[in-house]
Image (cartoon, rainbow over all chains, first blue to last red; front, side):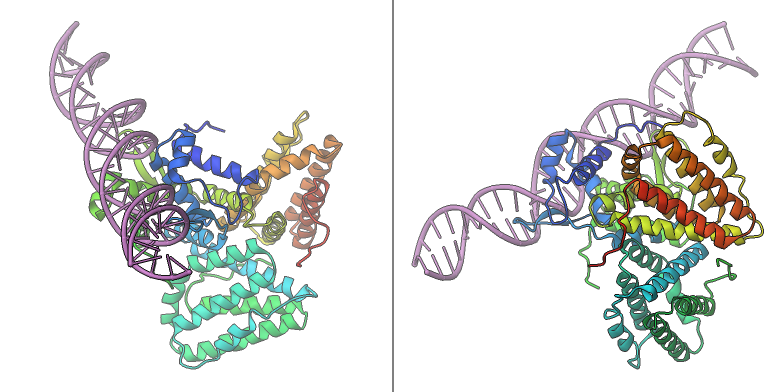
Length: 240
Length: 240
DNA sequence: CACGCTACTGTGGTCAGACCACAGGATCGA
DNA sequence: TCGATCCTGTGGTCTGACCACAGTAGCGTG
């Protein structure tokens, strides 16, 4: 490993990470103030701010002005935002190919519904209201897609794996703008929406029936078909 | 969506992202200098630096001092580092449970070897030398684990999906310190290393034979067994 | 003309200090 | 007692100033 030149902001980052790891601070706790951290670590306040900015974007802390117990930098550990930002930027910078993002989403969705269908104590109560909300007429494609995202995320979170849920949320966000564009290119949106609705119902039914293989196949077809219609996939890649 | 108060550094981040998205800049290109960006966007240089710091940690740019074409902030789009940092910090802040990380890794490894075994044009040339290197005697557990990480990453990259490869690298990094600790708790390390070696060979053989189901089962057992021996997995997933 | 040294320029990295808006607590007054 | 006011500490931002560094242009020398 090449020795990194000791950069001041990295010092701060490592200090906070160490405090986290050693349990000195945890979710809900306040970090020391920027000025205090700067003094403690012997760096400038601007360097502290650069480190805190990183932590904020990654979803580890939230900052608030003013005084009182709710002000300052507070550890929150909400991964979805950071994952979304990371994946979105990497796609923008061509670090990630669009197709790989889609394939990965497929992979995770696949696993999520299969896991849900297998579990005895599955709880779809978070997904059902969204399913109903999508039945409302007069939804624009953007509104429909927002609900669709909400549904898939609800399923992921129901599966109980926060890492997978965060990754799926991130993957979704990363290609959101492309999906929006793709929706515009679909000639008969209302018909497509109807197809999506029934596919959703079928997926949930398969999960509810405890049939993982059916759920897998349905969700795979659901996503693949839609992306193909929206012109987001080049070829079907064999992954199974 | 709640309107965010316009923060200066966010302005910079969005500006760069827009340039990326619109193709005005891409991998290999230089960003405008910090002072120039500050002047163009009407913000202070410190705000520009906060945004660039985020981009750097996320693996979007690399910065270098000095002058010439290699200096300044250059778009690189290497996602592994950012993914690793994000996952590692989230685990540290308890945003991600250790078990979820392990389960997700299992999921991805599973898919990787199955995809590799299915592909006609699979290329394991990156993995084989690592396999041989692991046969060397006298490796410490840390050295062995480093090679192990390299092997799994090589397989992921061979599968061709950069997103999955980055995620696996990140997941691995996130739990690296725990894995190191776990290795110390294994009584007979040499015996364990021998088991791991033969499991690796078996996995690669299954891939080479084009047997995705066998590869899946082998890699799953490989990882599960090791984590169990290292005390990193709970026996049963309690969701309550 | 060729070569080597030097000074210059522009880059990121860092720090110090200043000001602002803000939110909560402390204080003081009616 | 209760209300309005002031005070304090917070993050957010900007400015200006250095530094180390690396490439380049220029100059001087042979």
